[in-house]
Length: 317
Image (cartoon, rainbow, N blue to C red; front, side, top):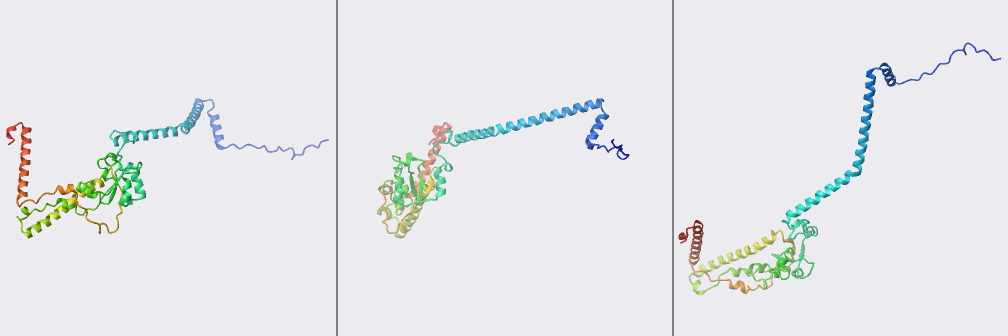
């Protein structure tokens, strides 16, 4: 027979009660408290609306992110490239004065020429007169160089003037400083300027020179030589500044002359054209008379122009 349970065994075993968090308890208590009331219905509606709104926003955010990742970078790149292309065409049109939209115009400014940046990278050239003659424009794909006052300039931007058949082609490949002053392009394509001042000196004439004493004549000749040297300097400086300040012609280097040049070399003869331009020395007071006559002629021309503008031709004289 089975043994009857003892008094201790008849005691009930403890039952485990689940522990519910305070938040859940509070929430359930509140739900139970307001169950069936209008406030409970409103609370449920607001919760469902907030959940639907948050879900819609999350979905929209995912959609926007997907579109951004898929399309925005490409569209932005195309926009930037289109803007740069339009800006480049507009800038080319403005800088070329309407000649080209694609930078294909002639006579580009110095900062758009590859030769300028190549020179800045490699440094200036140093050429002997013999080496300089190779750049006279007769060889295709070779720049055209000329030199003045021992400085070499690239004149390839104007092949019509300095290239073969051009009016100044004789200057190409030479340091023709002397020719720039004398105007004798063929025979004076040399850098030696000695004796050029003679072209500005008056010719000696016994009938004219007898109007001065020996001392006066010597002092006059010294002043004439000084003035002639200044004229040579000014004439050469005009062309040096012309090439040096030009945006079309780029300075590329210098002429390497023999050591001690021009010592020991004969003084070049003054060319015939420059020699024929010389005149006799003016008599004392003659220069002042010519100056006054020139001023009177200038004043008479001015009066004629004013009379023509006023419609009163009888006031010309």
